[in-house]
Length: 78
Image (cartoon, rainbow, N blue to C red; front, side):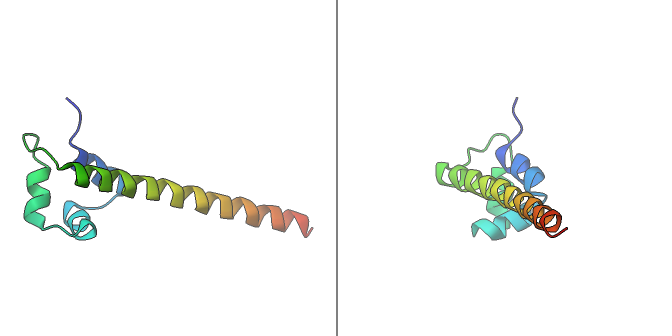
């Protein structure tokens, strides 16, 4: 069985279910309910979770790109 999308997202983003609930604008009770295997997470929430994970990936890539640019500029000035 696949890991619940709520637990998976929390793990990938490094945040708690409470923090994820706040980010999504839902109650802690709702988030706890969604984290249960027998509960279906609404499609809109799944889409939002996917967007949040993608945003994290792009942020990470941008940070790495900024590091590469800084190194290239440093090498260029030598």
